[in-house]
Amino acid sequence: KMKALTLLSLLGCLITANEAKIFSRCELAYMLHEEGLDGYEGYSLANWICMAFFESGFNSAAEDDNADGSTDYGIFQINSRVWCNNYRSPTENLCHIPCTDLLSNDITDDIVCAKRIVRDPQGMDAWEDWTMHCKGRDLSEWVDGCDL
Image 1 (cartoon, rainbow, N blue to C red):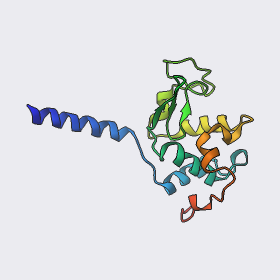
Image 2 (cartoon, rainbow, N blue to C red):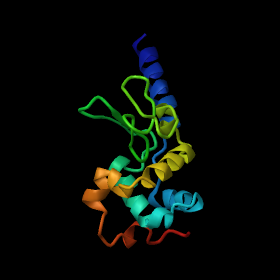
Image 3 (cartoon, rainbow, N blue to C red):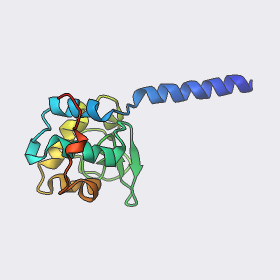
Image 4 (tube, rainbow, N blue to C red):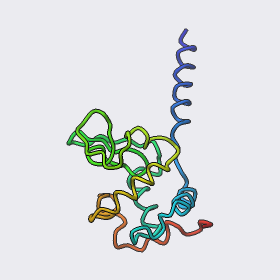
């Protein structure tokens, strides 16, 4: 009986893990380049890669609860208070999307929402980790060696 529970548990983990994707640096760079983020609103591709690394470690299923009751979702850690609807806390839902859609390995909707966020006057300063780790630095290493 214990073996069966362990096997079911392991199977559950594998199924869950299959829905998430941890991108490689260059894989993400290629995808973001293809989706038009290089130079979008004046931010280089390296800015987006650096931000995604410090926000989520390139993990499409990253989820982080905040002290204010909101939650950050996905590879760009998009916040439920303003940008998506988690059906648990108040939201403006400016990206018109359920937050859970931001947790899949298809990050197209994350990119669309990130473009919406960066169009606001705050730009990439909306991401605290970008401001702390990427803003105003030489970021060329983030795309070095990637075949774009």
